[in-house]
Amino acid sequence: MPINGVTISILLFGIALLGLVLRRDLVIKLLALGLVNASTILCLVSLRARPDGAAPILGAPGESVMVDPLPHAMVLSAIVINFAILALSLVFVMLLVERYHTGDSQQIERETSKEEEP
Amino acid sequence: MRHVPLRLLLPALLLVGAFCAAVWVTFDYPGPDRHAADDWVDAARLTGAVNVVSAIYLNVRLLDTLLEVLVFSVAVLGVRFYLRERGHVETVDSIPESHVLRLSSDLLLPVILLLGIQLTAYGHLAPGGGFSGGVAAGTGLLLAAIALGADAVARRFHEGALAHLEWAVLLCALFLAAFPVAFGRPPLSDLLPPGTPGGLASGGSILLYNVLIGVKVFIGTWIMLHHFILHRGEV
Amino acid sequence: MISRTVLLILLPVLAIAALTQRRRLSAIIAMGLFSFALAGTYFLLHAPDVAITESAVGAALVTSIYVLAIRKTGRITVVASEAPGLLQRDADRISGLEWEILERVARAAGLDLTLTFLPGDERLDAVRRGDADIAAGGLLAESADGVLETPSHLPTARYELRGPAGQRHAAAPDRSPPAYFSEVVDAVRACAALSMTLDLARFHTLSRYDLGAYEVRSMEGRGGYTFAVSPDRDDLYRHVVEELSKMRESGELDRSVRRHFP
Image (cartoon, rainbow over all chains, first blue to last red; front, side, top):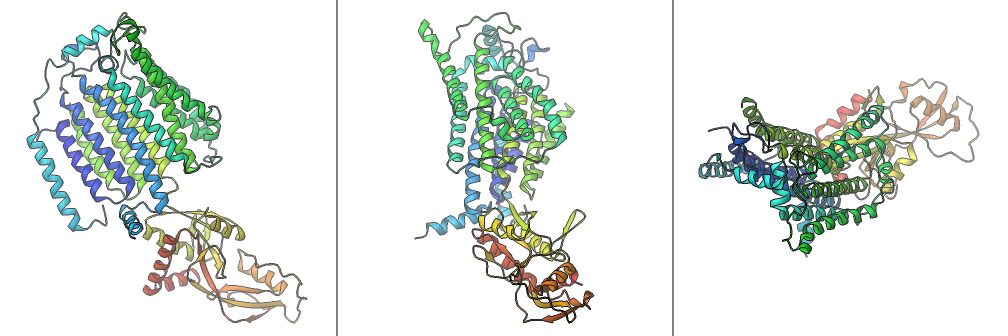
């Protein structure tokens, strides 16, 4: 199995999914979601990378073998949008934790299902 | 991963492992294409910028960037709204006065702000751009808030005017994008001349967009961090 | 080429280390490290724009925003006054019977402990207002309102002391309310000077102290040391009650008491 960015990104995606499912703390779940984002971005960037390539700047040495700059542009927007979504979901997690006095997702589920019972 | 019962851990591992293996086996990886970058290099030469990536996302695909800045603004608005209705503390406790922190922030803050300005203003010549510059400068302000106290830093801005300025900058960017319609050109196109590649005044309106986005992200980051600090009550 | 492979192998290791941490702060810092390694990887993959943006956003901003968000959660704030044997400060450590109980409660609840020292009356006010979660340090089990009192973990006995043998000071018309002293001997002297009653842990056997000059009379034993929990933290109250009963059943409580009050 070649060790390039694509395979490592698939591995990271699996690790992040496991962390998202198996950990009960809400903040750790958010961290795992961020890791999912990071692994996707790594996959996109390394799809078009070449081992002997050059940075996408005109006039850089080795310009003839420039890497494909389109994923870079897409990924820049993706990083900023991921951060924006993360900040907003962190606000919700903070409000949840303050309301139920616990950061445990199972306990919060129990409390909310108790509230919903008529 | 303690307290994870085995009846949960084993199936999760198997399922995720099977998923990852399936993705890897079916991944159609064509390998790097030798001539993929040629079209973009030609497009970047037309715009006159040296940084091909910023030529792409600020000239060829400008619409994606503007809408993404809009998403960022909405996120800042959401943070402001949800944290405001919970009530803020009046004054923020700052961490105890530390000589090391004060001295290092005195030394580092001008450097960080200057780095932010450089990343923003030279976005069309070197890697960087409005986003990284704005975020770097905003994090530098957070350093100032930690060292000097959040109240001391926030007193220099008027919160309401700051929020209005953020949306005004966004409107300026959108107006700049729609402006070519007045000259009979399609919107989102470039009015300014390309200039000599490598100089500061090159790349058309890429510099303007970079500056606008940099200012906007800087203000937005500071507002977000300030609301988090206020909600917690201490730095 | 080699450095890129090394960094790429380092990424899953850092990710696993980040997601298996027990404390939130350690996980956040490990994710910051991971972002930093990822930025290095992007740089080695010839993507400088992405590297700068990822390091600015992921390593700096995301880490600081998480740290700002998790402060003050996951903590139990304890306000206490110093009580020798129960909660005392020696050098830079804190030890005592009540501190051990509180540590066990915090570990069982998965939270951290922070301790602030306050004089006696301010403790109960802080807990009533909700600024602190638990008040400790030799609180007596009188029915204070506005707080939840846990079952007593150490019974106290009440003694009445009088001045040097035979000489009894006139009872002061306004008996000052019971204050707390950090040295038992001072407490004994002050109480005896005013002929007040004194609540002491039963194991603080008075025979330890040279009280030949005083006349000691033990009264009906009553009361005990408790914790006062803030009224909107009944989840914490339940934790404390559970831990106390567990410690009592396993004999751990007796062993701790004997360790701190030899």
